[in-house]
Image (cartoon, rainbow, N blue to C red; front, side):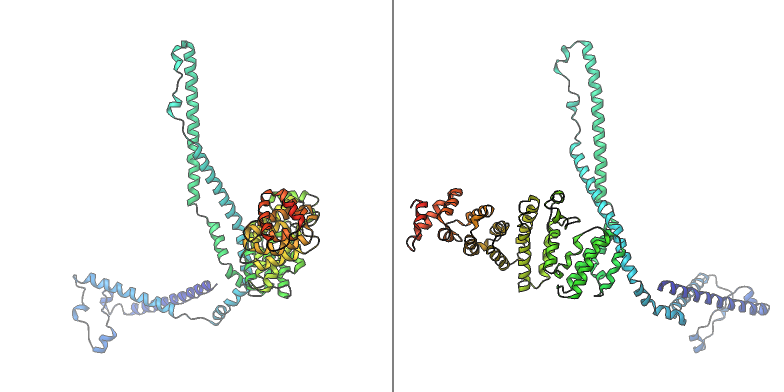
Length: 551
């Protein structure tokens, strides 16, 4: 708009200058028409030399020879000087015209109001940006997928299109001379036909290989315009987020954009969450969480990714409801679980495409990091809550034997325990100790402890001195599944070197239960006997234990 206004002003200025020049020319012609009989030099078109202002000041007059006819030797030089002078005058006029623009009051007012008009259009620009992204993003994805497929096909065909060797094509049986002439002729005809067919196959494969190679080459040189624009938009997400500027009512314009712009909306929400303090007690946090949830309903395509950046704004009950949707379900397992009557109530809460393992980890980070600084009591308590809800989720009597859910939860355990910077040792100790003292014990607690023994070796001493005694005191052998998990956990720590669990096994566990462990794990008997023999020098040992060990 500014350029159009400026060009219109320039055009108007040019028209005024042309009108002024035409009037000057007309006046000059009228003067020349009255004086053309008195000045013969003008009739001959002989140009008089100009006297500069400096010459006038010095009272210098042009020479007589300059007033006569032009000298043949200097004619070209004078013409060049005149042309240079004209060009210089034109340039000066152009600079003067550009440097001295006369604006009327209305034009000046329009230019001053231009930022206001742009600000009023910012919402439309914001919306159109998401619409552009929604158009280009599917094109970019499909183009890259097609090119990847073409490249794979090119490599596959190129690897299988090896021409047949000349020896194989021209090979003839050694006993051909001994055959009858008619039979030889028939076989020669058949052989020639097979050679032609073989040549045709080789030629076809060669053409296919060349075409596929060309497609593969196109993949390297084809300009990815859509991908480039999508990448540029995603890189400028911080600038896009500045449009919101804490005025979250502007987010409602996102309900007018297509669903294919969802990936950009996820990035925008993540940027907002990074700059906003989120808490279940803050009204702003509740409003953001509510709006993110409503986006699923608006698009009529449920997707928990809208809510992920604002998980820190959920209270415990809200997070417990959302947690099944955050699990890294395998697509086949989720489809099977949906058809399973037992898991139907759970999978009904998990519509939309499931999160990947990486996305699940990111969601847990949003939940814990949003609660407080790493190492703070708020962050530790949030981590305890996440692990506790995961363990309880698969510990109900109806869900504990569902393989699809168990595979999903086991994958979640591994992700949780691998997040050393978020899930601290203190939080793991707190949640495992609390759950090991419950009655009845959560079914998945032993599985979680087994993962801890593998992925967090530093917890070994804590498990041996705190967890195993607590499990024995809770009569863990009364639960068959839990007892098997306890034996596997004990196997990890029945060693001659610390950390080991020999003390609680030989002092707290009955001789009958210890005999069950030795029967299942016979390789542990020598280690236990050696420990008991050493303990005899320091303390009394139950006689029944000695009889079990054969001492």
